[in-house]
Length: 285
Image 1 (cartoon, one colour):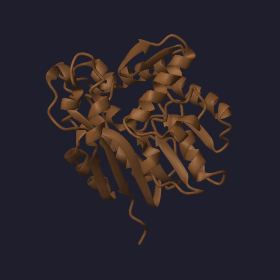
Image 2 (cartoon, rainbow, N blue to C red):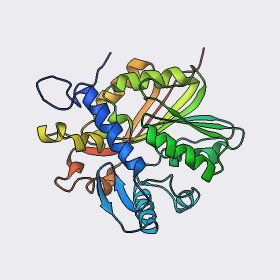
Image 3 (cartoon, rainbow, N blue to C red):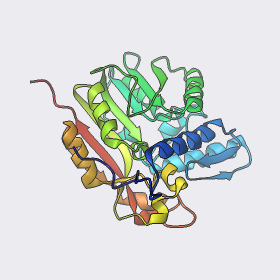
Image 4 (spheres, rainbow, N blue to C red):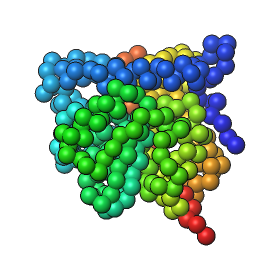
């Protein structure tokens, strides 16, 4: 079984960031984001106050356009669900159809869940899982605002999904799996909850060059979807070992334009790129 020690070191000698610390950093950072008022345009990669709620919404919408969301998608979800996070548009690659059950790993305030709910319709179902209590609370409030009766949010870690075996048709995720210190466990549990023939449609970042030690050990780089990124080869090995078929990981060169804005001190596009990650659980014989 391939592990993922190449990304974030768990050594006790101070190299990199250990798994327990990584989880705490991520939970605290995204808890802060969830608790921010609408008067501040903050994200996991930094915070820049924008004045008032309307300006914050403009900032988030602009970030969403940059990573691939359409105007129709942005305008179709009530404000408060879109926090301008992510590195792609998983709903655009998931080919969702009416009646399907969709699971979003690291669902945040629910933006992708509400978009998915429109695709699967009233006969479908969308489940969002997030490990941050404040984010789950915010997402549940957004269910009411979006009149999304077929969407629910559950508190839990993506390595230990609070979802029954073989009950999900499609798993989506947007720049979250890189935050996990146990990626093999994430994909094993994803495999468990998928129905035979179910599919994975994920937007995430992948590592294209070795990280300098100051990046590996930087808590902001860990929480900001940088230092936890795996190489394409490592992810392919994990997915193969778990049992997924039809594995495809396609880097998006155009993502360099927005990734270089993630860090004020260095150009992290030298080390990572956004990618579309797709795979399928084999159907029963």
